[in-house]
Length: 580
Image (cartoon, rainbow, N blue to C red; front, side):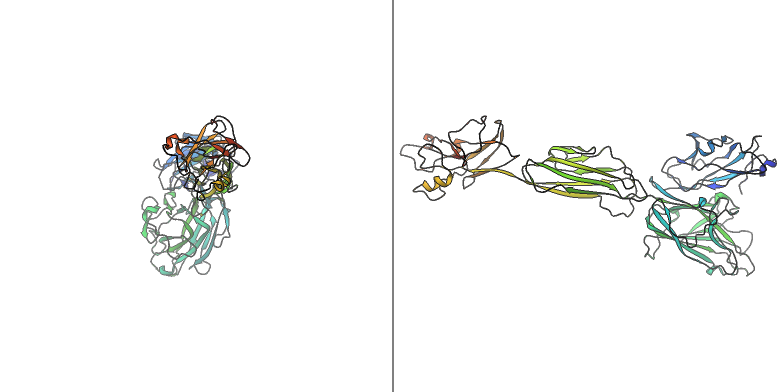
């Protein structure tokens, strides 16, 4: 047993520092606040403060008071006793501890208390703690109903034991002298039972697979003085599903064993006692699983050789805490407000990013929506920012989502002239998501209905002046020509907006047809390039196409016009007809 130096007046027994343990501390999560130091008093002794007697091993981390390193012999007020914190060394796993005592108004110290600081080498994620050391004293865990720990339920079942009669057979919360700190005490006396049959077993079941399950176990050791007394063996069989029959294979790297040769890993997920711990907190073993665990079966054996039925075989271990990763469950939905949408009208997507996790906030959140690049007039609500070059909408102000929280965003834009606008929303988080299957991406599309501006270029071979004629009339009047022969293929047609700005150009097809998908419903002007059209009639002797000049007429059923207009003048769309 560890013995600290302290004042040995009668006050030694009037103030007793409480032996206690922190829950397993993730080594990569940074500073953690510790539960307050405490002590009991007797004989009307007044507790004035606390004194630090020893410090945690430097390799494990640093004990701090309001951000400053604590020193041996440092006195703390009763208020400061609740302001201690511990900074674990990143990547460390083990069980450092420190000792302290209370002192009275005469500056006399009492019995020391141990403060165990089990550290688990798990990723830097939020954790859920089951602190056995602070569960109600006497609480039985042989068949414990569901206990809700920040959204995750844990229960025990299937407890069996080879202990017979009235011999000790406990699995309950207690403070046991052999273990120092309060814990879930597992104490058995399989007296008269052969080693091969000397075991007890229990199964912990989680309502979901948990990642980074870690625990601290006290006092896996052996009795070196009394033959046949006890040799502790504990097997840690984790399973990824309820139905699994093959346990997760553990290696020595999953364990940090007790100090000073107290125990050893012997394979088959088992740690065996090889030395006597002498009720020392140095005899703490820390285990971390590297695979998700849905259920955990613990088997506690007494492997000491059998001597006789009269030899007591009582052996004891304790579980101070379990921790596992809190899990987020981020997901996204994306829907088109309507589809199809007329070109030039407003298109709209509705996006939602949600954390459905029941026990963990989502940290390091990246929410984004991929749109086509170059869309016009994009607006994304709730802080969305559109990059026209990449087409990516990001939400730089959203880096975390609490449990059940959502970010909703409406994304509007001007629908392009044609085609399909496809959007994909995606969300990621640095928090553990475990085996959650909610989709982290979603897609939706909006089809653009083009506004088509079209017409026919033709040679009105019997044009006699006056207003222009439409194609049907001109084709019927084209005596001596086959139907459709007057159509002009390959003619260049230009499109201008109402302000005379060039928009696009095209050429007519074999049927003299042209069309434009215009950006929006508005007033446009079309112009035919005269040099690209020719008469279908036979020219008089001595004439060439160079002697031909087209006269453009425009007919759209409402307005007729003869002669072209410069594109700067506003005019309704008319159908050009070639005139000799």
